[in-house]
Image (cartoon, rainbow, N blue to C red):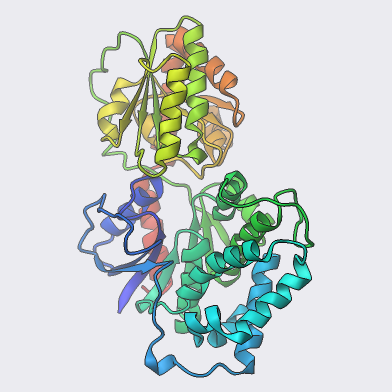
Length: 484
């Protein structure tokens, strides 16, 4: 039996980023434990290449495909009874209102149904049309039906997944992987841990609101906001999965106080929550003895080129900074393939603003080679948890200009007491305010002494409070307490 199974949705080991680095740091540093990974992705056709050298402590990797049919084993096939269809209706209604009631009691009945029965049976059709008539009778049924099918297919699919046996289960988000964690706990009786870096439900809500592939039409009783029937359905789906994971987790870990408040507002039991700040490997991020000489002001954006990182605001801020006569080069360091359309849009924007020669899209890089070449780190995200890149930049004495999301303010200004007394390590700006970002950068560009003072504050803060070795020791203790 494995000691710990980690549920990873779109992260380790096939995707780089802060959460993936966090997972790798845990499994790499606990060679005495046997780990399994359950990795969720859309389908078998999804391209995937390992971004990490998976350590020997990881003894099993199971890939789960959300949109490829998983056949129900012969031993579990049986004709659904009336209780199964009652459970199905209760489950569907729970998704639509954002909270699934009494899931531990109804999930055994759902697990016995096949995708074919749920997709094509008369009983399933009757449930769906009944709900449609109640909540959206004037809305186009074809739009309702196909969105409903794409929403529910992965949920029903995950009910069929054979999850590896372990002494403890640990999901690093709610959502799809959180559902698998809940199923693992209910089937095995083993503990379930949840660690949220960013609040998954909020991140999906942002993506859904911005999505242009979801048809928007006003009307229907389901709508509790201005997003329309279909977007509200998708938002309620992830709300219900989030609540399900909160309700069934034995312990919930989060990175900072702001996240804890959001979890409580979203229905998490405050008695379950513990704050465990993220950390960096201080021995791996060491500034060179001699700083890299720079001829001009160098800005660095480290992260995926995707809408939630709001790279467009970074590009616009660079234009405003250059307009002030600052000689600067901006480096955008991170993967560009996740959303090619958005990436090309950022390139086009830099060309339209006439600054394409001052902005370099570098793609994935070894960031340790680039931090010494920068003067300041910039984040313009619309959502974050506790960004590792800020802590990494602090190791190199880089001040940071970041939007007021997640733990950014806490990292830059300090939490309280002695931490805050260390002084500011940069500036915090509003989301979607490139003029504020540019103004903060202008102050740093014009005042080398300010840059150095803020850089020293960040270095001392990360050294005192954000050493990954301390975090790993705590999680090892947690796993042992839970039977691993």
